[in-house]
Every structure is written in structure tokens, then in C-alpha cells.
Length: 583
Image 1 (cartoon, one colour):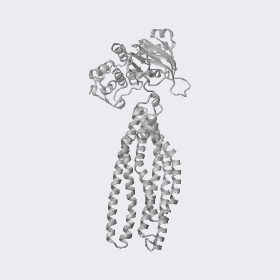
Image 2 (cartoon, rainbow, N blue to C red):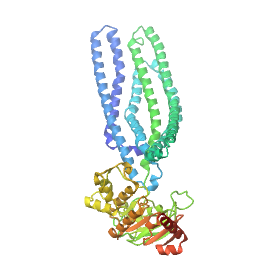
Image 3 (cartoon, one colour):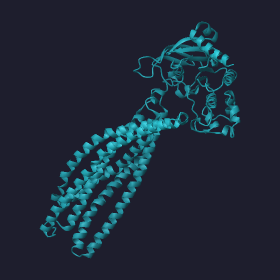
Image 4 (cartoon, rainbow, N blue to C red):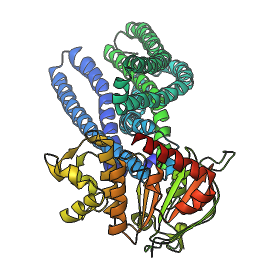
């Protein structure tokens, strides 16, 4: 964990190194102040020596100014170091997430990743700042104060040696008990974020089904669970304060009792024993030592809390994509031909059945291929093998005559455009969303692909046309409009292979037919794979594939399948009969 997070220090390295130096200087000066104060009392105030009072008073003033300077500087450098560090952690996490394959993404829920990038990173940042300051300050104060206190009176200072083991045992028990609870708290935060995210994304569904109270109850339950866990953890940690107070007051009482006896016995004579100034010095060191111990206990508690966050952060940082550029690193896709050779795939290694089972398929460049099948028949899984969104567990997939594992991923995916089932638009103008396909495209190119996707008409009817702002998730456009914008975005890539995964389900049959007609006229050389629920969307395809339970049940043209496939005939007749009845 430390090795992983240490890589994120980078720009924070210099301020992180400088901070402990200033902290040590500040600590040493603070600990030396009581010693000078004792001399001021014994040599100046007690004897009525004004020269000594002025001398030691000036020294105390200089020490105070220096301690303040080193303290402020240490605070500044620690803040810069922790800010750099947290920025680097978030940067590295986000960039690593961008490299994840679909299988990597499946390991983490979106809500969990949000929690790790926000709450967990904040906890780690606080710990890092604490490590650069308090982790050095507390031990330094403890060591310096012990040295000075033993120098003042070794017998009285030995009282501290009995307190430290007691506190160590208390801290060990607290840490062992609290850590599992804090880890569970942050895992539960994932569930809370998931509930909030689902509610906000589906707020229209919630309102249409009048399920506000149900959502409130769900949120209330998870919030109460977090409250309960935090309360339990804080109750455990709360034992730290009384343990520290018992130690502090016990030491003060013992030092007061034994010190007062020593002062009386010596007659306030330094040569015979303890003086008033030395006793006050010991009182100060008592407080410094015990405050240092209290700071150390706080450090252990904070590190216990942040360790759970650090583990979760490192899980994301250490997650490596299982799909990388091929060894040959091919950057050119010759054409849009596709071949599946005995391909098998499963989402989980422990799954009993394959999602794809021994698929053999050949598609020529420029062909239009339709894919139909029931829900869960692995239609989407099949096409996701082509741009290597997932890797096969057995068999090979070829694109342009080359194994997809040999391609540079960016080059392969730039030549395979997918319009997924869940159409996603990003906040920004329509033109900015379309240019995701090609950020350097001209306005004319953007408009041309929108015409091909039958999107230009409704865009021109909008107040700002192509500069119309799209809300996050495309909530201010209809489902059919969103689908057509996503198709236009894919077309702008000028791909050799275009995959539409049920991407015209929200448009009417007339518009669907117009889109397919424009494909035939505008991109005749592009291989087009159309997954559809409507048979009318694929009946004119060069080849139709029927998927069933991860296997190719049948394949052929519309006429061939209608003649020999009961499944296809049943789907076609049920849909065309339904359409005739409507007419």
C-alpha cells in the first residue's frame, strides 16, 4: 500500500521533505522554552535580578518568534504537499480507470468508484498531511521533553515511564476493534452513493410510479446503517480521551506531590534539590509529554480510519487492464471483414455455462448483417468481441484479416464504431457531442453525418441548432433523438465496421428505413452489423444471424430463413401480422 501511494508523491516530494525539518526545529524550540522559563524564575524573579529577567525574557521572545515562524512554514509546506499528493492520487486513479476493460469495470460499481475518488482520497490526504507534521512532531516533542525533564529531575521524570505502557495497551485495543468497523463504513458509503445515483438517474421513473416514499425509506435505511457503524466506531475511539485524561491527571498529581516535597526539603536551593522554577519546568514537560502521547494516539486512530480508505484507493490504482495493445501493435485495419473461429466467452471464470459457445462466423467487408434473438441470447456479447471490449477465453476473432489481439487498441476501436444499447450523451452542445467521433471534423462533416442519421431535421428545428446545449445524459432530448445523435457520432469516425446494438428501437419504422437507406448509399463499403428486435430492421440484410443461448441457431438471408427456420418464421409472422392488424 505504501509503495503504491508513494508513486503519487511526485511534486509533493520537496515540500514533504522540508516539512519535517521545520517541524523538528519548531518542536526543539518549544521544548527548550520551559528550561529558559525556569532560569527566568530562579535567577531573575526569585532573586530580584532585573538583568536576568531582561536577558531571559529576550531569549523567550526570540524563541517564540522562531517557533511561530517554523510552525507557520511547516503548515504551509504540509498543505502544499498534501494538496499535490491528493491531486496526483485522483489523477492516477481516474487515468487508470480510463484504461480499464469492461471486465475490469465490472469489478467496481460506479458508486464505489465515486466514493473512492472523493471520500477515500480525502481521508488519505488528511493522513498524508498528518504524516508530514504530527507524525514527526509528536515523537520529537516526546523525546525532547523526556530528555529535558530527566535533565531537570530524573527521579520525578521516571513517573512518565509507568504511563506509556498503559496507554500503549489501550491504543492497541482501540485500533484492533475500530479498524474493521471503519472499513465497513466506507463499503457502506458505496451503497449510499449507489442509492443516490439510481434515484437521480431514474427520478422521472420514480415520480411516474409515485415511489418517492419508497426511495426515501431506502435512503433512510442505508443512512441509518452508516450512522450506526460510525457511532459504534466512535464509541470505541472515545475510550482514548478518558485514558489520556487519567494519565495526564495522574502524572500532574504525582509530580505536584513529589515535587512540592522536594522543593520544601531543598529550601528552593538548586544545589540541595528542586527549585520552584524546576518544578514549573517539570509541570510544562509533563503536559508536553502527555500531549505528545495524545497526538500519537490521535495519529493511530486517524491512520486506522484512513488505512481502510487507502486500501480501497490502492485497489483501483493496482487494478491492471486485462486487455492491452497486441505485441505486433498493428495500426492499420485493411478492411471491414470479420471472422469468428471457434470463439467461447464467459463473464465470470466460475460461471458454469459460456455466454458465447463455439461461435464460427465469417462476414465479408461491406456486408450488412442483421442479428436477432431473444433476451439473454448474447447478441451484444457477440459484437463486443470485435473491438475487444472483452477478450475471448477460447478461439480467435479476426478483423481485416488480422487477429484482434495483434492490433493497437486505439487503432482497432477507431475503425470499429459502436452505438450501444444504452445511448449516452454528454453535457455540451450537439456539435460537441457529435465531434466525439472526430474532434477535428468540419461543420459540414458534422451536418452530413447528421443527415445520414436522420437527425439534421430535428436539430435545425431547435433554437440554437447545432449549438443547442445537451444536458448531462441527454435528458432534454427524446429517446429517438438521442439514438440518432449517437448514430451520427459513430458515423463521423468513418469506420470500417459499424455496429448498431438495438440502436433504432426508439425511432419509428419509417425513420428506421430511411437510416438504413442512407447507410446503403453513403457508406456502401462499411461493414454494418445491426442488432434489432424488429425483423423489418434486418430483413434486407445480406445475412441474418439468429442467436439462441450463446450459439448461432441459424444463419442466412431473409428468404432462406423464412423457408427453413421455425424461430425466424414465428418472429416474422408475429411482427408483420401485428403490423397488418394495426393498419
